[in-house]
Image (cartoon, rainbow, N blue to C red; front, side, top):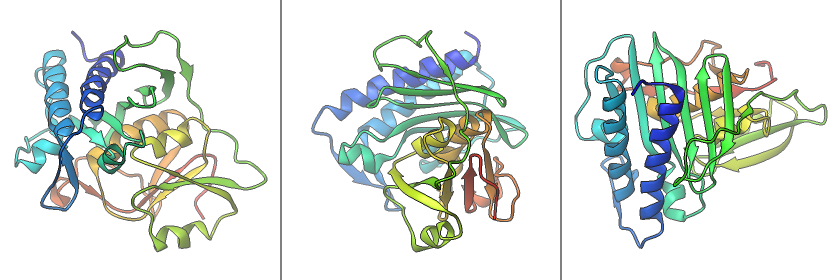
Length: 262
């Protein structure tokens, strides 16, 4: 098996199937040392993803959320993978459906391929390359769909922007940043779906002022950049990956569709 975009999508669908199996039960919820939530689905999905990636590309080093929490942080070169097996655990626990499986391939600091899959919503987003991405409806117990729609950011509406903000991590700093733009509506969404809403032309801008980890954002960034968007730090520099010296956390950033930084 080769590590193609369809392979990544297939792995994400299988992880989604496992996540949905747990989702339909009365699952237990634990709290990690950093106070974030943890369920059985996180670990099971990550094990499935790591096995799938190892089969497809045995030499690929993977930085994965739960492995890192357990102290497993492999040394890697310019090419490696970032995995969040269940992004939006708060949304998973709340059973609102807005959680995702995130898998991204990084080369020289930039995401070049990625998959974001929302199994409860049957929404699959795939960045095949830095310049082409598509979306499709996909059930977790089904195949990678052949029917696909190209993703492209939309032209910014003259009536005002649609801004997407975190459902669980909204901050006063975010509201202050949004005040600098003509915003017509603010859409709340969970997990890396926020990147994908911009990529799909369902929103125009997403500011994230607050701590995130590289595995939270890499797949979403791959999707939105392949759809014509940009992900920039507040100083205008691109958001890059492999920041081992920072413990793989991110600075504040903004996802721009057809919007110029102020």
